[in-house]
Image (cartoon, rainbow, N blue to C red; front, side, top):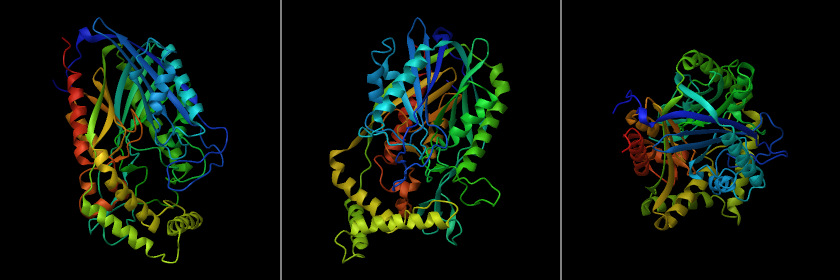
Length: 489
């Protein structure tokens, strides 16, 4: 089987597709999640939304179903996906609730989603409502797809000559040698149409989190909020369902080149507007071919599988080294009984000063005493508990729609793993969907990211799963993709 093989005709049936969207913007100021420090929102820059698409097809072999919901939050916590499944179970009894998948856009300008969040009930009610609405609005339709290229994200892990790596590190140092990993300019789109060839919605997959405004003081859906506004002007009533591809080491900013005075500020609203323009241009470029290649009858298969990934283990030596660093930092404050609080207060004060004097972020210093202390202390805690948590359960969703395939994971997945899966995939177009299918599972760093001194890099130092688990995730995902091209008996 290869990537251009035609679907099996006996597996095909016309698709039924439904769309819905709900506003999930809190009515009051909220604590914005995504940074170490608290930011209370001052206003709403763009609304937060939950967008759902429901897809179903029936053949004499099976009935395949899917509801995907994309949410403008930083991550999911507290079994959010299971809570929504429980809510809709009796409201749409003809739907298998295991076929519901949530994903997030990873905006850092949204609210906390945990079980103790004061916005939790509102969020679950809204997600249940949008899921039911999309399911009930299913109508016969078709799909097409396109792959375009546009620079949205760049690798954000800066390497130095001594082997160390710093997220958002300075590139004007003499020992700067480059970026640790690649970027990914691919913009993947699945277009949905009614039987009159009217565009109803687009699933858009971009390998860059929605984090232009990650350190500001307003509620924002970031560049996807700007895309929605601009798309509504060009294609009124068309839904956009955002997905983030493998992008754990990617952000919207070009660190080595920086920005000139008249360039859009990729730390603020002008950068979000610019990326929105780029993505609208991508859609308009793809549209003429997409409308010519609509398919109404395709192979649709959806597999859900729980896999166990080995937890990342730390050595006694690594733990001792981390304990030494923690002790050295605390020793700087011998007369302070609450040294941790002093370190934290200094961290916050530095942020306030940086916000006043620096035009661009990041304003928090991950190499401050607090930044180093927090990670080293976390390593010690993980080491002390690791014998009780030798594996990490992951719910994978892999589904095929014609010659496309979608595959989920709950990580901030480094781009290298995405390329591994895509390169081996049978599909003509493979959509990797990170931060999807369950609660947030942290970064999943590449082997290079944890080698030598680069191990000290913020986003690779302490993680639940490491490269061994990353390769198993790749292999399991590829095996499931392969099975979707096997003819049913």
